Length: 123
Image (cartoon, rainbow, N blue to C red):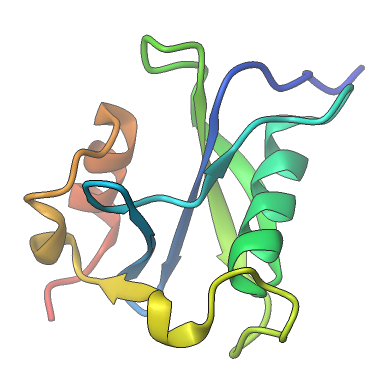
């Protein structure tokens, strides 16, 4: 069995304690996202992008959907560290941990929205 190579944009879905990790974007907040390196799986891309942007170590565990219409993939990631390292491009004060209810005004792919509805407890 061979690993599936990532194509298009990979969005990392990091949920911890019922909150979703968001980073700043031009028009507000969004998921840590990036493009794969050659022969990189979606899970590896998600883990790398989260670390490069935030300094958090995550394990890209599962692709939520093979694509959301733009050739991209959303990957569920498990947080492996309680606090970020100094290696991220964004400092902790530039990150946001939001409940599902706080993301209603954020454009999230349908598979991510569906996952949040079923897997984040109300706070």
